[in-house]
Image (cartoon, rainbow, N blue to C red; front, side):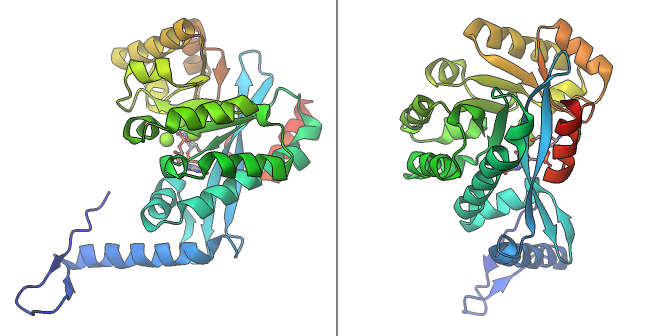
Length: 285
Ligand code: C2E
Ligand code: MG
Ligand code: MG
Ligand code: MG
């Protein structure tokens, strides 16, 4: 992440912003432009939600993860790793997050459900800033009602930062949504600093093994040791565990041998636009 450090020029006596160098100025201006473009991106139809399959070890469909995409008219594809962070910094994450949540729920209800089991679960990433909002539970509850989706088919993916940095009422918020049937998954597990205590206290249903460990599972003893520990931890706490970023059969076999039975990754499918996703699930049926 670039450092957008600025300083106010003392010598000029005005609140003029100076940049340390032209590179920094260019990065800053580009970011301001992206932030500005994001204001109109939703209404301009530039934000899309793509779906990536999750499968059981026998290849049957378990569910999908909803992943946001931004087709910028001039800059081309902007990665969610980039624009989600910008939306968080600029205060646009509530609106963007709501739009994505509603889109994923209504796609499930209206388009996907006819072709899948009632056990199919849609995993939706939610920023910690959304969870920290006072209205978070009301908003989610309302969006579930409006879209008519079955709450038990919705899984909210949160990251460890949500539970470490968050105010204490996150526990209560999660319980409220859990009472509706909503599930929770802890994304990128192993990369953050959440204590084992928070796992004990929070109503989490699933741990998601970060794809960095999956990538190195056959290459690096430490990565495979961490993957194995996450699986054992999930088993002892009675949680589900899913491995993300599976690209090869041998990665899947290694994780299967360690006791992981749910998978997501390019080996099965990339994140796909709704129509392509629908063709896959229609053909698998
Ligand atoms: P994530 O939630 O951990 O999502 C998994 C990422 O791994 C996705 O990147 C996905 O495309 C990628 N991936 C899946 N399978 C493979 C594989 O086999 N190999 C490789 N190399 N990569 C794989 P993506 O779509 O670029 O999203 C990046 C991150 O942006 C997500 O990580 C998530 O943290 C965030 N994000 C995406 N959509 C949303 C959203 O709607 N809301 C929020 N708050 N965050 C989102
Ligand atoms: Mg995720
Ligand atoms: Mg992840
Ligand atoms: Mg990630």
